[in-house]
Length: 398
Image (cartoon, rainbow, N blue to C red; front, side, top):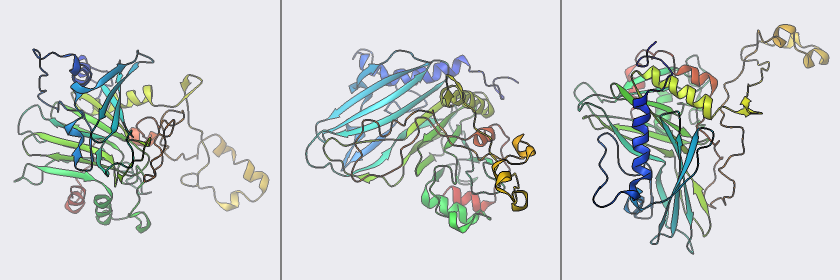
């Protein structure tokens, strides 16, 4: 199988593409006035996130060329770049923790905001941990968004689907948004979703937080690392440019002196060739950098009896001794079922370490890496599902 189809081997062109993007962020301050930053042809030259404090947008003061940069050494195949800004007008300090990878065409980042002033900040809103755009190589090409269902306990859990980012054959523009209201509308037309999960806001309830934006012969995979409610939007202008945004949903808060919040962890992975090749590179990346380690070796999830697939009915466990010791067929793993686990590295979450929670902000800390399950990972290498009924597609693009 060649690289353009489904190989997991990283290509030199993929590494060059992501490194040029990273260099645009971390080398901007080094460029002299005689050598201005060249605007990239296919993505934004701005930092890939944004927020607002009152009426002041972060775009007004968060510029890559104004950042104070602190780059670490290579360690275990990755390197951390810390970009820091301070805004005298809002008394906010901002840190972008950008991770570069030696062997993968990927970059990750977390954004941290801290209030250094007195009193309270103006409301912090519209916090997009991902806010950038991506253009197709050829103008007028229609991009595709590939993603997978989450889990409602249905027969089609984790099914892999593909949508063109166009409204109709007459309107080449189109937007797909995933948030609470769009997910509820989607569930209403998706026959079989139980009523009690209509407003389920778990991170992988309706959609897995992994998205492959295909732009012809290459594309970008993005992922949201957050254990609470998130939103993601892909808005195509009809001429090949797609604005990508994602982050925490319903975020509106004020910070008091010394308080700090952080964004979800975002991932961008660039691939060239076929989308299945991109999926397989992502799988190798997750195994290398986000699979839990036990004593320096990849950890394995325990196999446990489960009534989802093992059919362990009451007559088979009539005595306490048999309850404590399941049948040999189950012990050998022939009838065990393991729920798909969402995991990051087996380390303490950074979300709360050394950070005071904002009094107006309550959420569950995320793991240190992009979250995905073993079942979900496998779905990224399956074939795209047939087109959904028009009603379902309309709901997903609402």
